[in-house]
Image (tube, rainbow, N blue to C red; front, side):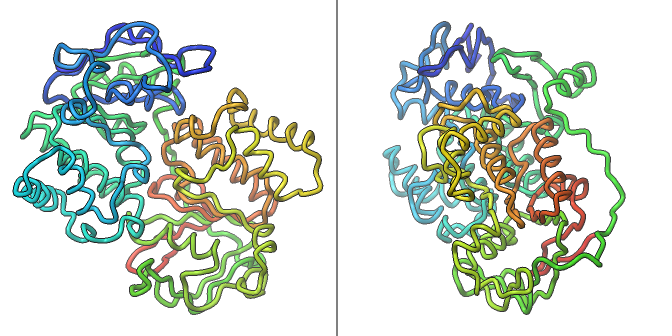
Length: 481
């Protein structure tokens, strides 16, 4: 066995109970193995442990060990771990040190003390094989979240480790791009005999290529292991029970009542690329009805996030945006904050307080400045109970899983009761139960007369939950029937 976990138990500092409990696992050379589980079940923690990043100063291995090639992973030096077991982080924004992907790849290989000639050869190989030429020299701050995930994958593959752990590798990618990356991973696995251990909610995507699928339960131990395409139907109920499988039932498209008053209108709207030279939307005229759910879906990199950022920040565009018949640019900043909330996609630098409770209280105070602190705290606890985060009141927000961080931001937005709520990818990285909760909350807000605009790579989510479904492509927005 190339990688083996023996009876592993891991507990975070100051935690009352282990997050990983009595876990046994193994992976052989050249395998693709999938680990699924509900949000917050410990999947990312397990990935950090297998990569040797944990325990460090974050917690303790109370029992058991992780063995790589007959040696404890904990005893390996950092450079030894990196060249043998590499991890692609779920939040790709925290993965980069340099300005462009080309510079990042060079930096990674330079730190491995490779010769310049070999560095350039490896960079050219990965550019060609992963089709990176279109953004290899673009500032990483200007590419989409989906492109950042591809860049993060390239930064790991260029090392050529024997084991690669991928934490939600397709969370920001559209289905077409994700399928292309999956084919590429399968090809690399067969050619280079690299072992891939993949954390993912979307199990069915991997069944054709996976050697093993394991389901991590909410108690930190495996519910089932050894699942394959042939045996998946036998164990499918376990995946449903853990909220991993997504049973969409498509409803017919029903157009929203256009007699409703308009809350937002775009006039001769041109969305500018972050480089200020190119455009992402050209001369759009469109009205959004009050009290509607607008779902915008499209390929990675078309400009969905940039569009929401331009609306929220009132910058990065030409033409006009009207809100309640008044120019959005005429609203003062305080007025915009009271009118609209924006839940960003990237949670890497949005939290300002050391405790989840304090973060929520501050958000309530921002909208209700006259409210007493004690009242805000009680309100925050009530809201956190709704999304099952009440057990993390005193936890640092950055110690939550990415899915839980997203859920925290969304619950704050749901509580704030703005007239317009803009959400960038509300359901990425979420299990089905949490996804359903999020979208039901959005529907409840709509029934109160709020207007919600969300983007997604997931056409099923857009089709299932939006009143008006917009396809963003070729620099235009097209309503989908």
